[in-house]
Length: 126
Ligand code: I3P
Image (cartoon, rainbow, N blue to C red):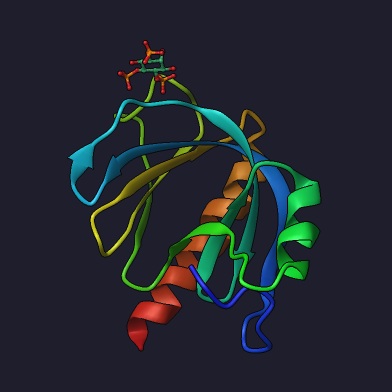
């Protein structure tokens, strides 16, 4: 994902640590591995950093772009089927990759679910 630090992207939700697991890549199932990830929501994408410190460092380095997902065409929904954990949100990208985001604190994950969903829905409206 390019455009880190570009003037046309704005942070919608400031970084926060959430549990993240990528469960499929382009339709191919992956072994689930939950990791604590620093997540930042921008106007068109969700960015993932290992640590909060990396957000500033990555943006300073020319040619260095963070790991993330394009939210255009993405489907965002609560799931109780993809995990035994509570408070799990599933994001399915237009390229067929699937991510799970989770937090034990319900208000926290609700805020992220609502913001990511409305961002994705707005982008899809074109
Ligand atoms: C997985 C691990 C995950 C679990 C997943 C297991 O085992 O226990 O935490 O997901 O369940 O397969 P392993 O470490 O051996 O890969 P949840 O915590 O989300 O339930 P799953 O296969 O039902 O997704």
